[in-house]
Length: 345
Image: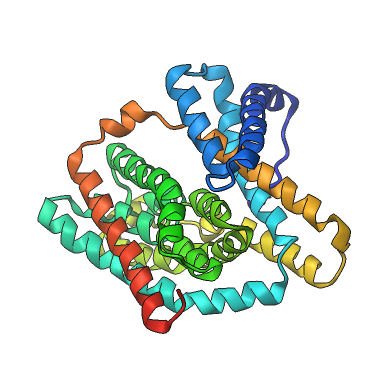
């Protein structure tokens, strides 16, 4: 099982220390600055500071293992830590409440990717990558379907760069728009959870708006992330039907493994929530746990910012970016329209 706690040998640990320390130091600065600018918040400041450091100072190769570790595993730990502050009944209720909106936005994402992609002349595999990345969970979804549809590395880089670009825009823009529209905490959390791609960006935008919005957005996003499983299964069957002879030679559907792609940290999040529901965690220490979770989020987002190469993102070309923009707008607007229809804004 791919749990977020990993056994690290001493050589690997030594390799990860420089990058981890860099993310932690910048994260501490972002945490402090976030206290003075609560409307922006530490998570957003962390991601921006990370991007600035990455593109102005260009940390060397020795920092990369720790940065990559923080961007993946520290983020997962932060989500689990958030679970200790949420009751299981709240998690289940929020998941069920958001499911209808999530299904609508997913359908809109796939239709928009197909129609707009055809109009722009973007080929099928890139349309699938951008559509699934926008509909489900950004880079994680792209990584999950890559071994199934087997796109060129160039297409994968196109898709991830495009998705990441709109993640950054969403983190900065959504809280501002939410305040301008006077959205409730629950309404904004549902909007962020269904219309922003990566978990990190959802968490950043949600908690920048309010703690309640962040809690709600996190659960909505984790519910949405689990839908990558049926999507991967459908794609696997489609690929198997189209390339049966080739797949027999390769020994499987692109080496497809359900256990490998499943986001196991979601299960640990539910375990943490169950512990909270059982009353094992004393009420007096729950604020400290939430603060620790917030700091872990900031460190993870700082690491993601430290991984962002703006020059590479600018070099990905116009058509994939226009496709990503169109799908992203379609999802964001459809989420708002569904909420307006059901009176949940």
